[in-house]
Image 1 (cartoon, rainbow, N blue to C red):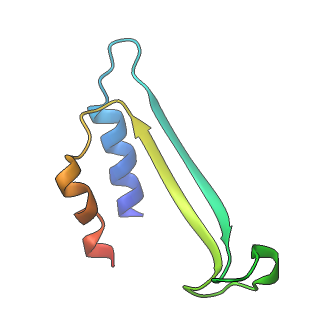
Image 2 (cartoon, rainbow, N blue to C red; image 1 turned 30 degrees about the horizontal axis):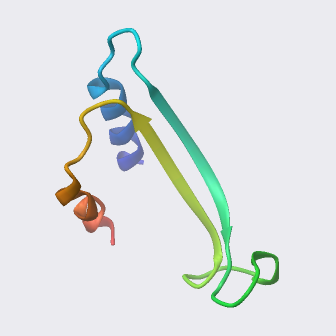
Length: 77
């Protein structure tokens, strides 16, 4: 919950808003199959298949430097 709140607050706070500021937030649930299986064949329920939830936050703020992007979620692994 804290991660979600921080993402939303940062998107609202740091987006450059000069009348054209863009802020979009959405959540998607995506079926992912285990290797070699179609999603409809896979019952899911593990790292090799199932449903993945993706949270996407888009704004026009300065963003995270490319060299730091890979480490953003390191604490959550």
